[in-house]
Image (cartoon, rainbow, N blue to C red; front, side):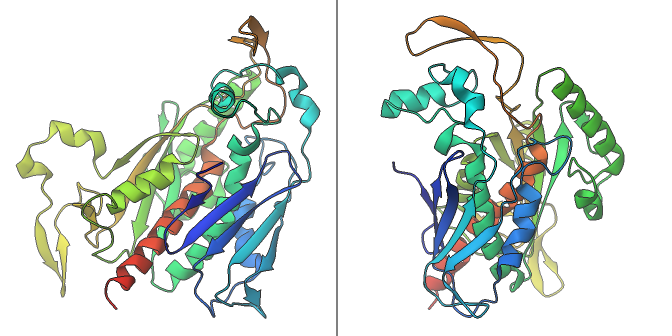
Length: 355
């Protein structure tokens, strides 16, 4: 199976399935002498793990990170860094009724059409469980970004028709919805719980802000920084749309309004506005990088649905198991991880052309 690796110089390869013994990641290109312990990785894994609140799946996984290689006495060695996360609470019997059924909204049919075989137990490789490995790798990338004063902020901007109004980054980790608006967060949680009780799910929008990114990252053609970030974020299965800066709203602007005028900010060049979201011509400007992501409603819902089986017969299916009624709270650390991995790779590539 191709497509299990991401990055060029800072490269990750993930492995494992949702209901296999374990999942994990191997990271190539980790700089030597980086202070790193399993607790550094565990902090982000705990934010992504299942069972952390009433509005997430109740699958019980500790998601304990085990560093297998690449670290000696608390420092990276420059060798490949391998991290293992064991699966502890897979209940494969919950999926017996969909062994030969293509679940609506899932990758079952596409996977079957491509390989002629599929892991029906929670989606196997295409399960959101795989993202735990990305979060582990992202925690390492964040350790590098901190040394360059780069900060990634991701929060739930909207759940259904409830949109955050007052933005306070300090409250993001203080509510179950991971919203930057504590008032809106309460309404988001109530709406998610209502959907769960009805056997349904909700979509959401995440807002991403990256501060401290230097000007000059990215390339002008195929490896535009925004293209690389879009690739990274769109590789998260729940993400169905990504926009930078003002995004689709620029289609309603004139060039005079949309153009970010260059100005002096102290002793540095900056822009008076940031309609472009910190990236122009595929290269970072030094302004905050602003990204929004649209998340689809969770595909696994308990409402009866019509679908087809492998014999092309129409059947009714009820998806059993434990699933998130809204993916936003747990995708927040996944989005952070993918942004961090992209930026570290871009910084290494930039350094490589300026020896």
